[in-house]
Image (cartoon, rainbow, N blue to C red; front, top):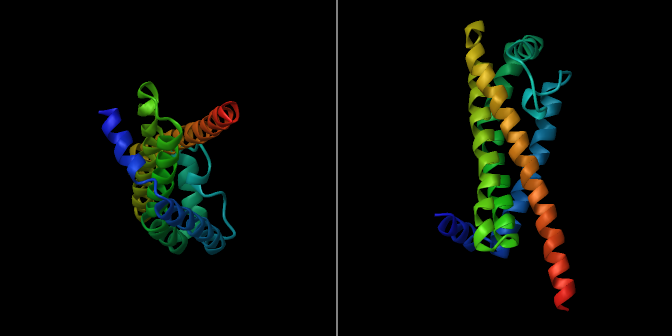
Length: 176
């Protein structure tokens, strides 16, 4: 199972695909800067920090007011809906290239879990931003848990990239 997933992701790792993903990654980062300007002055965007409570989320939404909440919700399902797909695939391709042994092929799932958690978080936060009612607290807790999972798997992905890069560099130095 892991071998097949690993092979499929690895096959996507062509230079044109990686270049396209890198450009999309940078475009998304610029989009987040524009979104921040759109929402100014504002408290920190909820999904830009690893943890928040439903009460903190409600406070942010109250400070924003209806118009900013709508802008935020739209960017959650557009810009922030695309971003996890971009970084998830980019990181998965890199992990697939760096970890090729049979025992470590499953590691390609780590960035995909970050992507999945981020997508769940984005959809729930958009729904909560569009919803004016306070009875959405259970969804806010799930969104907060998804945010924490996103940060955890994203960080684990970065660690894999660093460790895999160092290990690959060492292998190339000893074989030279």
